[in-house]
Length: 389
Length: 243
Image (tube, rainbow over all chains, first blue to last red; front, side, top):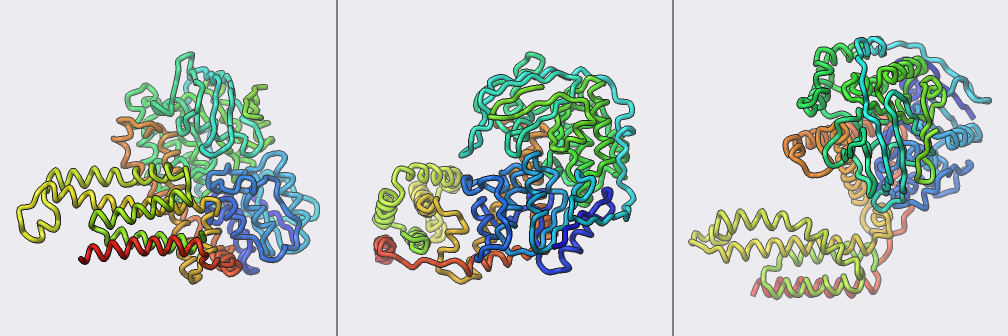
């Protein structure tokens, strides 16, 4: 049994090394960081996803089933949270006959309970090969070897301090959420009578198990989802972004490809700015400033096609709009997934700067080390309620 | 009823709907589908009716506007070179809509009848060649990819404030961006899947394994009754049409 951790910074060729290793020995199971790389894409339900991979003979490995997917068999795999998708993929592997598995930063999305279970499961496999890329793992677990990648790809910097040069102060609105009820169609209740107050000038970390409703809350705030009941107040004024549109929150989604509004960076930013053209916010950054900010992330031109960038670069670029300072509240969903430690440190420092300038910051992460670098208050989501500490 | 029987039943109803043109032919087909709904689907039939109406209504309005409102003649009258009437064009619109409604309703009812089966379980139960099963599964996969792309693009544009969740003027102005974003998302999802996951795993070969393990069901007596009723109604419709 060979278990290997591939280490190295972003753009050092870790993913390439993982692919080479996996393809060398015949078909291997692959779990990437996002849905199209974690799920087969052949199944309309969680039950079908399991059946695609289930072996007709009992696999010679311990089962891995931290979530009861049989109980929510008709849920669409794409509608699962990022962490749940990874857990489903690992359960599929545990029931399959694949001898090898490769995981590209996907375990970074797992919560504090599921992540150790997943690593234990991989550590206890009796046969085959495990290859893992994981930025949250400082050293390989006992019994694992490690390979360091050092090949650098020039061009993708992460000068967030430079990006924020000239950032002005801002009086972000105070957010009050009252009596929030939400449930997905054919799903369970996510929030029941939930309440929350978010003060400007502070960073809040949304914390909860995989599937607790962290991303759901962000989607409600930007108007993607409409609550069944409840109200949101911005500086005591009622706000219904699901009805009137979002003009307060700049969201960087967990999967950066869930946030692009066009094919190129120019299209993406242009469309966002066009919506704000009647408000004072639009004057906060010009095209030139956006282009200069993009260069700090290694993007030479606004005409860069977004999907031609490596995933880690797209993830960094997804912070551009939130960190441009146009919107008063910054929301980052799992910003550290796929990002090396140096980048996470730089991002944490940037978020602290935004808070000092009067912006509000709301972020979701399972990375305690990253969260520890951002002075923040904790918002726990548990039992369909939210509590601040 | 078995999935095989249901698939043939839908095919028979589809054929019947395509050839029926007289009121009696349609009446018989609708009588059979009503009996099927009552016996096999029960109260959930109302959901099927609502969904079918949702599909057919926009087409009905559009066709009525074009054929009755603007053209004022039926296609047959145009072909024959006679002046024609709005009554004839309205009849044509009604017949087309009745056909489509019947086809959609039959499909919806069978879907509801087997809603306890997952799509792949349904495909596995069909007694058709593996190639056809693979084609069905990939078609489903493509359809799910498109749905996911729509969801992804909506999320992006709503979160950016480019469109709103509820109907709005902004949506009318920026709706075309949704189309572009959906298309871009669908392509990149598919490309992403085929670049990493599928070649490393040989994921598609998993489907073949799944289909080989499956044990297709044979037609049962329940199937025979519905197939006979459906075929009888369709044949009667054809006979009336010829006569």
